[in-house]
Image (cartoon, rainbow, N blue to C red; front, side, top):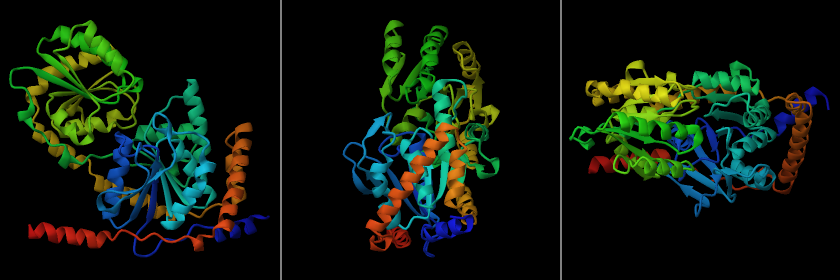
Length: 463
């Protein structure tokens, strides 16, 4: 087939255009979503809510979470599809299961009349495979990278190769910081022109200061809210806490979160007899995070790698001064007078905490809150994301053969393997199109958000 015929074939198989009553019809896809809690989960939820309020149609596709299966509705009619697929490792799906759930994905995208497939997080197998299938089915695809990776260790090398394969035919890529953008461009060998930087944000109305929640007996509280894993610097924290408690008798720690490093933290507390000064809260619901933060004077982040770190923005919005390791995109997040940086070593973190302690009385929590409120806003994130979607409308999909050549260029034998998988997937998709044509798939009824919002406003006015 020549290039012109291939182009015509691609056009004939193209995804349906969106209806005129909405700006865009987007499918957010990732292994990480509610009820699981984390930065990626809240990013997807908040961005989806703002896009809906701006007149877009948004659905979320993720895997099964415990008893959450099938279709669930959330605030403002956000429809969530929990696919019948169990998590494999760290809430990520089993790799290579895309052929099993491709019929589900195709049916959902056709039924909801989706025109943009937007996936999140490099650790998500569901996101990677959705990028491949979205490309096969001629949908415009977007990938948001929330993480940083190195280039030397074995795990990073393999992940970078996988990312290069996945993004070889991605329409556009979004990163949450300039550091993350540089990292992703290098790892995936991308054209910087198709990569945008759109930072995270915080719903500052949910993270307001409450100085009355702090202790008034002279005790200074340092708060840590994080997943208790190696990447979040828990090994550093294990060394930092005993030294800080040894130097300052009026300092206590409150640690919220859960993970494999919790046992080691509890062993540290037992070894140094710090039961009265180190409080372990375990897993904290996102709705309760603000109450935990409000108890503190200092927020401590010991991460070894971060693309953005939304937790320090939440802490600053609640009025805490921040101490953080100077890694990844963290230096881009807050102005210097709101954060104290340290190299990722126990001695440097201890020194940074020592510098921050005398300044806690100089901090005006409400001033911090107002400044963060002006810096970060989910509506601005949604608006900038819409700009990316609008630009994608003018991007013409490449013919199938050209896309296969892109995949082939990702590696000598890996490229051939990937081309084979894409070719098999294309044949499988065409079989599904023949067995159940898209004309035979019933269209889903859109949630009447405008009527719902008007009725909600009227109800609030009546009260």
